[in-house]
Length: 157
Image 1 (cartoon, rainbow, N blue to C red):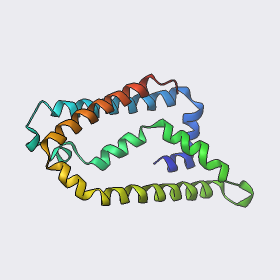
Image 2: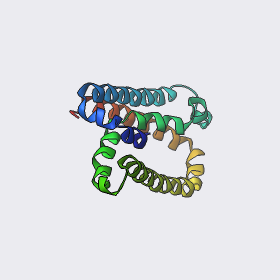
Image 3: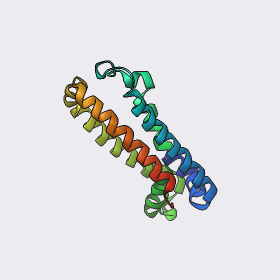
Image 4: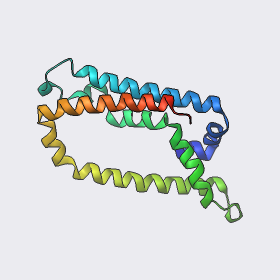
């Protein structure tokens, strides 16, 4: 999403408009706090043995990750700052070069993430069957998400 937004010039809008940047920043912060509070709220409900399907109940983890990333203005700033230094207007279309470089970055980053996910499967299965670990993980991740949301909301940029 950020590669397409940067190619279309939307990242430049975030870089030049304090209002646009602030709106996206606060939307992202609010979403992180929401996810964290929801995770902590689950600790009050069913016993740990019954929380193993919490991702299915809350919706797709991929959807949550996508919304979180789209609402992260710092990712947009990264693409705006990083990719242009490799785009040379004398060699052809800037938009095509920007899009190609951005997509190459996304493919490489996604490949690394997928490899971690595949190789973490057996560890994940063991952790999913450990109620004590699940409770601690929910508490830690909920608190961390709320903290990150607060830090994002209070950040100067």
